[in-house]
Image (cartoon, rainbow, N blue to C red; front, top):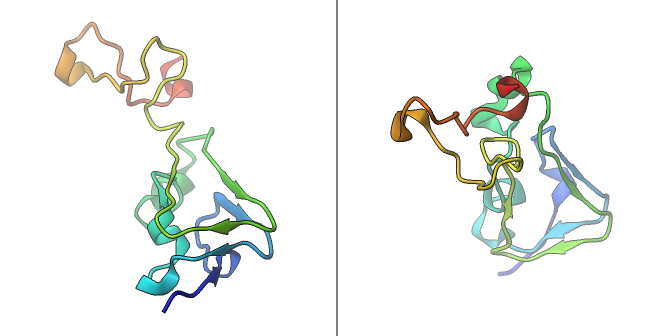
Length: 114
């Protein structure tokens, strides 16, 4: 049976803010919105310790309005601050391990490189 879930009631990541009435309609599989629809956002259970360390100061945040309905299968791909350099000609996260010493490491956040 398809049933909705009020998103704000299940959010644990401090980098997600959701309005009062927004709901996720993919709850029929028993997993909540954050588990199924949000990818690569620091502050989730596996990355909570790194986020709380303060190493990253410019963290992505996901804001969802007050009256939004989000369908099953929708995915929010975050990680704008995790190696995808917007100031380079390519957003590919180059690695000196793969491409040699003369390549600046694209996996480091911008504030650590400069």
